[in-house]
Image (tube, rainbow, N blue to C red; front, top):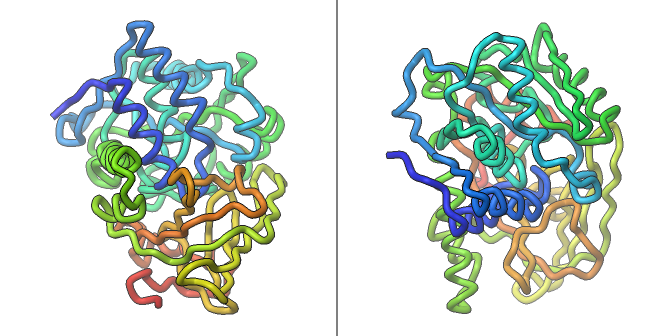
Length: 359
């Protein structure tokens, strides 16, 4: 069930993570380059299935905290992800036997693989989001009742901090403030989990799914076939809109990238307009005053020419894009989960309507 990461896998995972990132999670390019460099230096990364974990095995999730706009301007030191894990290990006086992807979207899908390359610790083929989300409490570990404490943040200057908090929302507020003080981005080791927690709460097969999406996109690019159809052959992706960017506003504020992008319809969508609201990720897509897709379902934006996913930090005027919708994991669609990741948690006076029921 376990498999060793290759350079070819990394390239596909980077593409798939861009799709599942729904605009967030950070740019994948630097993580892809760093991971390939580490593999060429002889380091190895083993990906193991959830079924291989002992119930009492200890590990933690790994990712980055901060605004995507910062991630393309502030180069990583390279080892901060692993140093955040080490800080948590020292605090707990233990050695972890596995790592988990904190979110499978964007650059955060690659960060745990980089930490694993430094440490030799395997990575579990799972994550607690099935996409990217902007806040710490928005994952299936927290929704399922796993404690957020303790957790660690580390920067690229050799500093690390341990947090003990009463709840995940407090962890988000305090962690976000320190991340801003660390320059707008930081490495995060959270939460401490055991094998039974991953089995019960995580979304299984996430890394494999990323790889499969990337493989399909690369094959479509090679064969000059439709990218959207290639993605839809792996996940139930639904075309939402085709258009060009007529307005974009994304600002870094309070540790988040916030704003919107507006599109004017092209081809079959000529005469229509779409607006997508942003908080790190694409949250709600609107035609007029009607939502056509909402969080936690995935809103994926692809460059019409390259076929690659477009992060919120890379939006530009006049870009021609395709917008796809992908249903979220059922673990994010429960009543309990929607109190944490539904539209109302982002300030919208909207109830979540599954993508399949929206026009």
